[in-house]
Length: 257
Ligand code: IPE
Image (tube, rainbow, N blue to C red; front, side):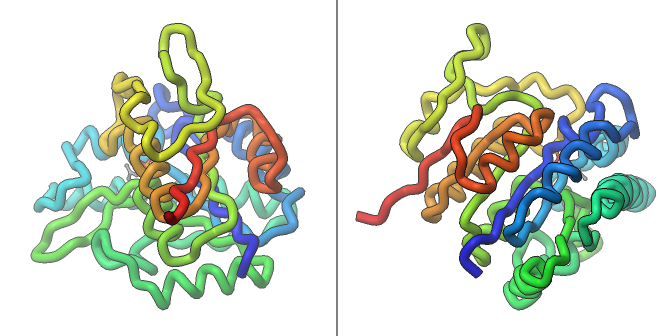
């Protein structure tokens, strides 16, 4: 399928990061309405924001595989299912056909299950929209780890090679300078070192904006352009998904020599 759109809805867009367990329902509803305008097959990944991150911090759980507190594992997972439900229900109200699924359906620990990932593409092609999310996942020998939605973007992009890869965050894109907020409209893979990112995300166990940029560069290295846009302006997601110019940053794909 040529025109797959892969979108990550950051936790800073779908939740209020400073209000524990509070979804930004207004932002979610506006995004759902915007996604309804798209004709192309879409796969959605969402982050944890004040749901998954909130509990991961409380229980000291990280991306590193470890024997975390069993109640922590349970409650982080449950909170992500709850947030997924809010998003899925909003999308249904907008007339979309979302299908929520936890990442352990198509990954084993941090590794992809390729055949399962291909099924997501086939679902998206039949007008069902898979909606997956960052989660706590079982690794092995009673160890678990936090698998971020950003890592899932790379896992999915590698197998499915979408036409459009979009990270929706709560800022306009990638800034060269945080003080002046000067937006970099286009940058190449080689530009990663010139990017300064804020590391002040308080309740974030997966690395905040830095992780997003790292994954965006990984995907661009695999030969796909990646757009970083502000999801609180959902028309920018639609523009990016249809290849129209919009406010945001494009990490340009590495061209093969
Ligand atoms: C985090 O996913 C998932 C959990 C903490 C369980 P992300 O790392 O993708 O979340 P955001 O987008 O940064 O909030």
